[in-house]
Amino acid sequence: MLDKGLLALIRDRRGLLAGVVLLQVGGLLANLSVTAGVCWALYQVMDGQVDLLWQPLLLLAAGMAARFCFTVWAGEVRTRLGSGVKRTLRRRAYDKLLRLGVRDTPEASMAGLTQMTLEGIEQLDLYYSTYLPQFFYAMLAPVILFCLCVWLDWPTAVALLCCVPLIPLSIVAVSRYAKRIFAKYWGKYTSMGDGFLDSIQGLTELKIFQADQARGVQMQAQAEEFRRVTMKVLVMQLASTTIMDFIAYGGAGVGVCLSLRAALAGTHPAVCLFLILVAAEFFLPLRALGSAFHIAMNGASAGQKLLALLDQPEPQWGGLVPAGEGLELDGVSFSYDGRRPVLQGVSMAFPPRSLTAIVGESGAGKSTVVALLTGALRADEGRVLAGGIPVQQLSREGYYARLAQVSYNTHLFHDTVRANFHLACPQLADADIWAALERVGLDGFVRQSGGLDRVIQEEGSNLSGGQRQRLALAIALAADRPVYLFDEATSNIDVESEGVILDNVAQLARDKAVILISHRLANVARADHIYVLDGGRVAEAGSHEELLRAGGVYARMYRAQQALEEVEHHG
Image (cartoon, rainbow, N blue to C red; front, top):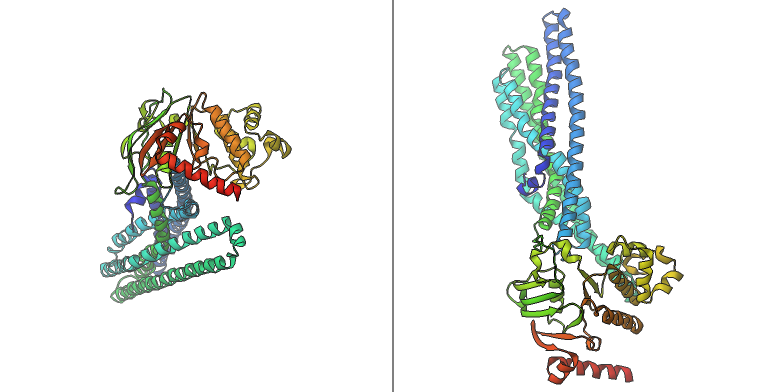
C-alpha cells in the first residue's frame, strides 16, 4: 500500500528511507553469511577437512559482526527518519494553520486538529520509518534469495519464489476492508475526542441544566461505538495474521520438503541444510510487512486528514507593503457555496480619522464583511483595498501590521497580563502597558490583583465579561495600528464597560480609521458614516441623523430597538 500523497510529504527524506532499505539488505546478506558459515563448517566436517574449519568459523564470526552492525545502523537511520518526519510534518501543519490565518478549519475541530498533529503524526512516523522501508525490503529480499538459491537447487528456489506472492495477495485481499475499518476507527476516535472536549468546556452549563447525566450516557455510547470498531480492527488483524502465518509456514514447509527430496537425489547434505535454513527467510520479510500493514493503515488514515488540511486553499498574499491609509470595499460580491450570494456589489469606504459603522439585521452579511476585511476570505468579485492596493497584492505581515481587531470573543491567552500585551507588541514597556490599562479603567483592578504578573486563566475565566473586553481593548490600543475593527465588542457586557469601550472608540477615531459593527444602533449614533446592509447589499448610507430623516431600513430598526428598550426599562 503506497500512497503518492503521503510519499510526496517526505521528498527531502527519501535518502534516509533508501538508507534503511539498503542496511536491511546488508543485514540479510550478513545473515546469509552466518547460515553459509554453519553449512560450510558441516561440509568440511563431513569431508574430513577439520584443519580448514577456521575458514567457515571466520565467515560465521564476520557475518555475526556484520549483522550486528547493520541492525544497529538501520535502527539509527530509522530513528533519524522517523524523528525528522515528525518534525517536518508538525512544522508543515503548524505553518499551514498560520497561513490560513483567521480562517476556520472545517476539515477538523480543535480536538481533531490536536489529535491529528500529535497522535496522528506519531502513527505516520511508524508508516514512514517502519512500513515503507519494510515494503521495499520485502520486495527485494525474495529476489535476492532466489538469485542465490537457484544455483544450488532450482526446483526448490522456484517453488519458494512462487509461494512468496501469496502473502501480498492476502494483504491486498483484506486491504479494502481494512481501509474502511481504519477510516471508521480514526473517525470514531476523533469524534470521541471532540465530544469529550466539548463536554469539559461546557461542564458548567451541563450542571446548570442538569444535563450532565444525559451527556454522560451520550459519551458512554460514543465510547462503546469506539470499543466496537476497535474490536473489529483487532479481529481483522488477528485474521490476516493467521492467514499470513499459514502461508509463511506452509511455504517454508514446501521448501523443506523439496530440500529433502534434493538430498535423497544426491545433493550434498550441507547444501540441503542451507536451503532448509534459508526457506524461512523467503517469507519473514513479507510476514513482517503484513504486521506493519496494520500500523500503516492507521497512519494512512491519519495522513489523509493531514493531507486534507494541507490541501485547503489559502488566502492569496503578495509582497507589497501598504503605503496609504484606510480600507475600502469596491463592488465586492461573495458566496460561500457558489450559488447563494451573501454579498452583492458592496462598496464601502473606511477613511482615516473617522468612525464608520456597519449595521444590519442578523444574516445581512456583517460577519462576511468582517471576514473580508481581516483577510479570512477573498471576494469572488470586486476588490478589498488597503491604502489603495488590493489586499491579495500585499504581504500578509504588512497587512496585519496595520490592523487591530476587538470582537465579542477576542482570545486572551493563558499567561500573564504582561505576556498578553507582549504578543501584540514585544517591545512594549511596562509604563506603556499601564497607560493602556488606565485608558480602559483596568489599572486599579490589575494592581490590586497581582499586577502585570497576574495570570489570565484559560478563556479569561478569572475575569468578568466586561473586564475581558476591556483588557482586549487595552491590548489593541497598545498595539497602535492605523486601522481598528470593533466587531460586536460591546456585546453581553455591563453598561460601565460598554461606555468605556465606546469612549475609546470615539477617541481613536480622531486619528485612526475605526470600523464599528454593532447590533445595537444607539452605539453607532456618533459614527461619521453608517452603512446599512440588507440582504447582502448596501441599502442605505449616511450619518445617524440623515438615515433617521430618510425613514428607511435604519430608521425602522432604530425605532423598533428604542421601543423595545423602553418596554424593558419600564418593565
